[in-house]
Length: 79
Image (cartoon, rainbow, N blue to C red):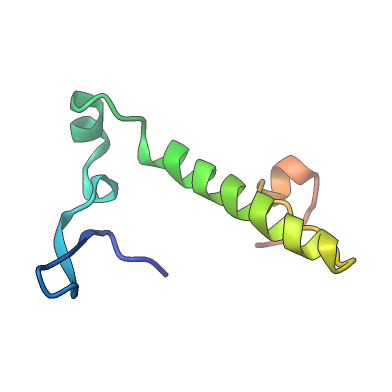
């Protein structure tokens, strides 16, 4: 679970939440700003998570994860 607000430190080095991040913007507004659709960004985050998790899992001899959909994996179960 992550915040969708931008995070900054104030003068007392306390964390403060500021404006909404670009994740909160509509796809139309994101396009106006030259950003990809949010779904592309979510896929990138999932792939980064998969890569980091698999590095640790492999180091312990555990099964690796796949961030792609069940459908693209050819798995016929409900997520």
